[in-house]
Length: 147
Image (cartoon, helix red, strand yellow):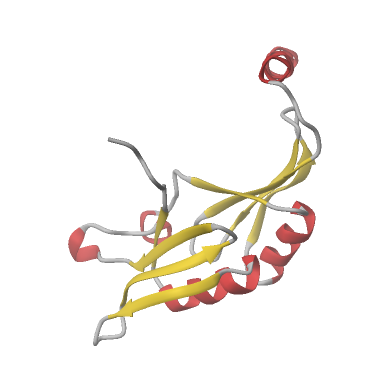
């Protein structure tokens, strides 16, 4: 048995607004959406580069709630881009909140974090250096021991 793909599946309070935000902030392309007669989006798929992001409205009657309802998120989605500073600025321009400004990190990436208007957090980064795992561990150990 093998795994063929992995998809992030987001739960949001307002799927049409979330789809619009992801299109404007990250350049997502909508593949399709399934809408109930009531207007609630039961499932939608967006392309972000080569990756598919799935999302739906909340279904509280089934225990499916998003970050706005539960008051937090325990997952961060990482986007590896050409220019993290520009992508973070674009995400904030369209309604995101900057959680962590872009900085250069020990592991060879420049990155920052934005929280989208629906409570999901996105790490956005770009490569600045190729770092071998043993060197990455050395730098991480130094960082954790020197404070």
